[in-house]
Each structure stands twice: as C-alpha cells, then as structure tokens.
Amino acid sequence: MITKIFNFLHNFIPNKLKSNKFFKYSTNIFGLIIFISIMTFWGINKINRKKLEILENKVLNNITNTTYLNQYIYNKWHRCDYSSFSNIEKCMKIKVPLNWKDKNSKKIGIYVKRYGNPKPKRIVVLLSGGPGGVGSSYTDLAKDLYHKDKDQLFLIPDHRGSGFSENLWCERDKRVLSIQDIDNKKFESCFKDLKDKWKNDLQFFNSWQAGMDIHAILEMYPNLPVSIYASSYGTIWAQRVLSKKNTNIQKVYLESPILLRHGNFYDRNVEDPIKVFYESCKESPYCSEKMNLNSFDDLKNLFKNVHNHEHCRHNLSNEVREIISKKSIWLLQYNYTAPLFAFLISSIKSCDEHQIKNIFKYKNEINITEIGNYKYSSYLHYNIFCNEITNRKLTKNDKYLYSKNSSNHFGFVDNSVEKCSAVPEYEVEKNNFSFLKDSSYKTLIVHGEADTSTTREYALALKTKFIEENTKFISIKKLAHIPLAFRINYDEFFEDKYHEAEKCRFHILSEFFKDTKDWPDLTCTENIYPPIYSSDNALKLYEKIFNNI
Image (cartoon, rainbow, N blue to C red; front, side, top):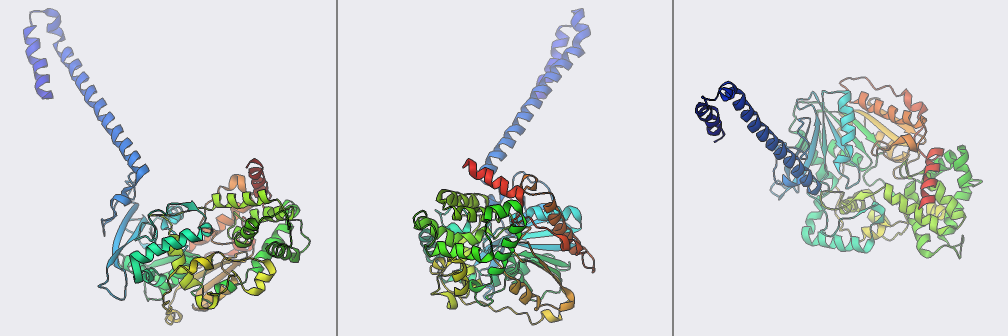
C-alpha cells in the first residue's frame, strides 16, 4: 500500500504539473521529501512499538519472570528472565523421580541455572545452604569466578522442595522474616497442610534424594571434570553427592561443614565460639566499652541470670526474656550481625527493654528470608533439620538448644524443638563413604572457630572421611558461619583490613577450581582478619541506626 502511494506521488502528480517550470525542476526533491516523511513516520512508529515491548517486559518482570512462565518446560535451556538474552546464563527444569529408589514414582521438577562457558572445559557445582536455601544466592559468586577463568561452567541447582524446584510451601505463606522467627502455631498449621497434600511422600524431600538429583544434572556433561563448592547445609548435600561414586568429580570445597546426625546437634560446643567473640571484643576499645565485662564468666552469668529472672527483675518482661534466651545465639551466627551481640550485652546490663527489641528487630531486617512459592522453604528446612541434622530420639523431650551443661552456662533455649514436633519422622539414609579412601579427590575444608552453627569437631570428623594427603584443613579464628554466602558493602561497614579477608577467600576459591593439580597458596589465611565483632566502624554504624529508630 505504501509503495502504491509513493508511485502515485512520484509519477502521477509530477506529470500533471509538467507545464509549471518550478515543479518541473522540483519533482525529484518533492518525491524525496515525501519519501523521507513516510520513512520518518514508519521509524517513529517502530521505536514506539519497541518502547511498548520493553515496558511490557518490564511490567511482566515485576509480576513474574520467564522461569514462572516456563515452569512446565522441561529439559530445555531457556532465558532465566525477560532481560537475559546472554548465552552465558540459562535456566532449565529437569524431571526426576520423587523417589530415586522407585524409578516409576511420580516425577517432580528440579531447577538448575547455568552460568559460564556454554562449551566448557570444566564444571563447578555450587550447592546452597539452608536446608531450604535457593541457588540464586550464589549467582554473584559464579559470575566473579567465571570472569577469573572463562573455561568453566557453573551449575547452580535449587534443592528439591525449595526455590524454583518442586517447592514445599503453603498458599498463605508469603512472608519475609528470619528463619528462626517463624511463628510456631502458623508453622504447625502449614505443615499440616503439606502432610495432607504429600502424605508419606514428604520423606522424599531429603538430602539423599537431592544428592541423586545432582548426578542426574551431571549426566548432561558426562566427560568433563567436576568440582563441588558447598557451604553450611550444602556440605551435607555434597556428602550425599559423594556417596555415589562419580569418577568425574575431582575437587571438593567444603565451607562451615555439618555432618549427618553427628551425635546430638543440640549438644554441640558453642562455648568456644562465644569465647572467640568475647576475646575479640576485648581487643577493641569501643567494643570492650560497650560490653563492659571483666571476664568470660561474667558474660555467661549475665545471660544465665536473665533466663532465671535474676537480672532486671522488674524491668524486663517475660516476652523479652524469652527473646533473649531463644535468639541471642543467632546474632553470632554471621560476621555481619555479630557486632549486634555487643549492643545486646550493653542493653541487657542497663535493662533497656526498648533497645533489646530494636536489636532483634533490626537483625531480622538485615538477615531476612523470603518465604513462599519459588522462594526459601522453611518447611523443607525443618523437614531435613529435624530428621537429618538433629537426633530426634535423643532430643524429643529436651527443650534446650544445647547440652544441659551449656544451658546452665548461658540459659539459651531453642525454638526449633516445638517445630520439630510438627514434622513427620522418616528414616535417614546412611552415607556410603567406603570408596572415598580409594578416591583421588582434592578436598579443601574451611572452618571458622567463631562459628556457633557448626563446630571444629564436625570439620575434623569430616576430614577423616577423605585421604589425608589429598585433604587440606583451614581453621580461621575469628571467622563465623558461611563467609562467602552473603555480600556486604564494606565501604561504610568495616575497616579496610576486612577487605583482605574477602580477597583471600576469593583467591583460594578461584585458584582451587583451576585446571591444575597444585594446591592454591593458602598463606593469606595466616593473616586473615574476618569482618567480625570488633569492628569499631560496624559498632558505630549500628549505634547510629539504633539512635534513629
């Protein structure tokens, strides 16, 4: 139609106007102007359509993403979201048996993201923590490591029961809060709904089945060397992967390791890591001033007396005493929340109930967990935690988080035992480590002596599973739990010296996953000063925040 109009304007009109000398000489110019006008109109229209398309994609991205729309597209790599057109980052869902021991059992979807070289020379599998965590928390780590070595492909799966994999969640459960702060009554109600939906099949959302899922993913890359990175609960997941022999697996990096039902989890040693906090805080003038305690025994007695209603008898409500007993230990779990422990001690000593509430409120705001469909599954967390990490037969009637000896020292009690009472029990598969002594894995185990979630005992016990000459063990005094799992803006939070700790860990990781038989240079760990406790900048920043609450 546009062509016909142009021909009419270019031929018919000029012929009619040939007697006019002006038009005789301006015919070509007139036609060119008309042509430019039409093309300009067409171009503007196309640009507007493109803008509309971009806006539509942006709106859709705010509501959902390609993964949601493609949740029924299996075994095919696709864009992870509308804005991603790169071949470096793709996502996929694969179908696996709900029960790997019965290949005819119903199928569920396991989600995996790949990041890196589409035609790699090496594979690195990143296993998230939790239980219940999502793989996307390691995307930034994958990007950083890929740009260090572009021959690698990183596979980042979501554990069965969590994230974009088949997810254990409840329709009304779309909250954002700390995993320890889930209301017990709501939790029990939601787990009842899950039991009604899944019945006995809930037992198959476990670490052993998840380990078999990883082998199914690795079948896509049958002839490539594989490395595994795992932290926290991910180290149990990694142990499950290793319990099935795979000669392609060559390197294993285990950070903040946990063992499957190693004794009584509630009975683990937390006194030593808390002592690391005390000693570190005493070294810092500002932290020491806030804490204002003469001895470690004074610290233990302070919390014990709060628990026994012997401190601030008329100034602290039962609600606040319960919060202190149940949640104080979790302030020390991560490097970036540990400075809050010093403020807590100061607030308890001054019987400042308002400040104590603010501390835990703020901790929840900086250490949140998105719960719901396609998110972290608190129900998977406790399904595995209660059956595979704790020993329920030993702790079923024990309200205390730690051994009675430790409880008498600190007065800490646990919130998870009540949740475990709502979780159905299942038998735990035993790990088969018999062949590990014949394997040639290079294994690097990193433990933080300030870690209140795992212990040195766990790390050393795990070390014995591997060949000694192929295993390196690093123990870092002032390091808390999973140091690489969270990204922090250190510029205003910590002093410059803390940057060196992150550089050291990244150096070790990037060198370890390279195509070499040599160990990375570990000398930087000798001078690591992790971002924990005694940072004056962190304490002052928190104090400024609390003064404005």
